[in-house]
Figure (cartoon, rainbow, N blue to C red):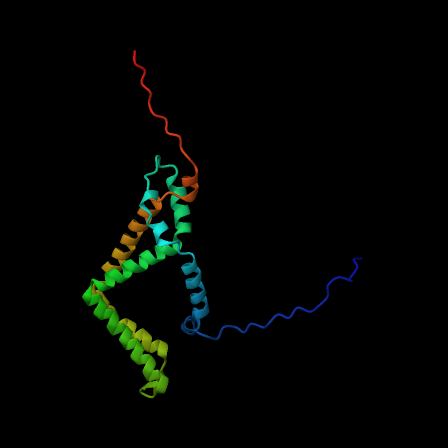
Length: 196
């Protein structure tokens, strides 16, 4: 028999109660912690390359063949991920600021959410003797603001931002020479014509 002088101990497995919560309650309980968001944002911000390097036009070259394009795009997306995020956010801000109706719709929706948070800090809202949760109030604001966003053209704005971001990011990632390509040197052979 094997020697039992190794590790010993009791494993305590916590009892998991059957989920008595409804799907709605479980979805409402899931939230992204502020610490995670702050950590991701600071990590992305630290990864931002200098804008002079990002926009250096001397490093923009067409690839000689199509073969190195996927590798170049992947390297540039890895390298300039933070910069691309700021390009995307800049396009979102540009789109919102140049669409007054969308700006009004966003202000109305955010204003309603702010009022809900202020009112619920002092007392809970009750309709017909039944308490309405904050999540239900926010859902109501979302449902009521949907027609306003539709009239403001939010759908076209979203697709414009996605399309413009994809175009700008792919253009930069395709044309910007990676550090590995810049270090490697290509010897271009010129044609030599022999005079007879």
